[in-house]
Length: 270
Image (cartoon, rainbow, N blue to C red; front, side, top):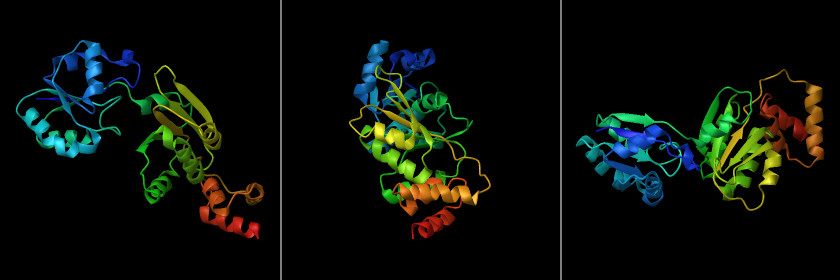
């Protein structure tokens, strides 16, 4: 009857845990985001099990038959294409419904791209906030980033390679030009860990990019007393480089009043 939520490798097949192998071998069936992908993993492990599809685009519609199997006494393992299910991947709906029906839900931990990236970020904040994929709509992205701007915790995002440069530019505009890490193709043959300011990373990844992406951005700095002269010099320097007042206010807002910086930039620009 249990639903096992099983983490699978994010690239290197050697990262499968012995417990995950045992659970997959003992369960009655495997629920997969993509049965072809997970079928290859099971074949690699020498395991033959019925596969049930739970893709992201049709997750809600396919949950009930799976819940019935669990209630009727079957033991099922939930996996995603890579990493931990229900973490920006299908599975959260199934977990909720299983719990509502009194099904025991058991985590089988393992690889996670977000945690792997944070572990090598080198940023001093001991906490991190996992934001996953930013919303598609510009207004929703802006709203989310506004909520995250003042967090003194590492910010972790997933992104597609096609949108990476654009997202780095949005992060710089909204959060300021903070230090960041772009972790690409973690644990795979072409793994890349690129570090630098958001503006530097934006330029670095402005061309063709491939692979799975995790972005880790350093948290907001500790608020400090504003030095009016130093702040004015910084605003003047940014205006001289052609930056717009709104962008300057966004960049300098951690630790300062965004409205005050904007008004100062307008005044100095005149």
